[in-house]
Amino acid sequence: MHSNTPRMHSDKGIIEKMLQDNLIPSGQLCKMMQINSKGKFTTDDFEEQFRMRIEIDGKKLMGFNSTQDEFFSCVAETSQCEACGDLKTKSKMLTCSGCRVMHYCDKKCQREHWKNGHKALCTEKLYPKDVFRVAEFCSKMLTALAVGVDNEHRIVLNADSSHLCNAFMKYGCKDHTYLPVFEDNTLIYIPMPLKFVDYIAPESDNRVDPQKDVNVTGQRVEIVVQTKVPAGKNTHEGAFLLKRETHVYLP
Image (tube, rainbow, N blue to C red; front, side, top):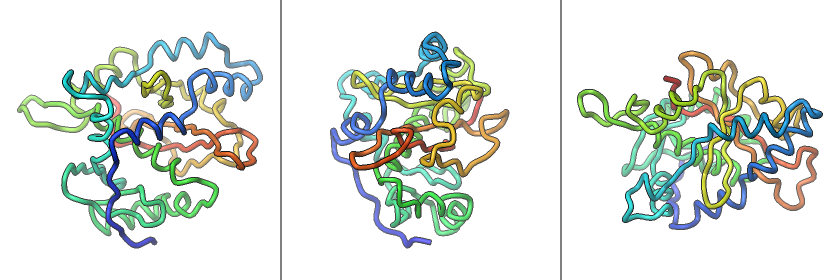
């Protein structure tokens, strides 16, 4: 297991560039799913799911006197334990020195997460570190959207009053996974029924799926992050695919 190193802080503007450079746009995602499904998945199927998308308006969420850069930076600077989901905004967490992305409350949580799947991901040489960073940010963004106030006016995660819960209840969330894309300077999460997930990148060498039985009643919401393959990478699918369980629970 890797030793712990201090957490790296994000600079203003870097997050948007990272998302723009790495996440594939919705049009490319739709085309790839059509090809992988051999025509079973149609443009109409994609447009129906895109209609139920969750768009991140960073300026609105942060306050009209702020910018989306500032909102993204606040989310990026929040640490969340990969094992238990605990959030910290100021105090530092332990950080895996291999990927330099995964954070933990303590060594116990780090050991648990290492044995439960991170060992396979962290030691996978095919994956650039930006793939881990994009997936971590997209996961933490959902966490930020799931924060709200409970009946006793306490700030809690997975609150019924949260922005994300309202979106889930509006469009339905059972048996869906969420696909983040970035276009027109906007981070978008597209809900995709599990019956379509195999069309994203079937039998790909770049598919890592350490978790099982996700997105059922009482389980955590899953995202599937598909990123562009850097120049020089010779892969069949043309994209890296990383599944990741968030610490956001279905309502």
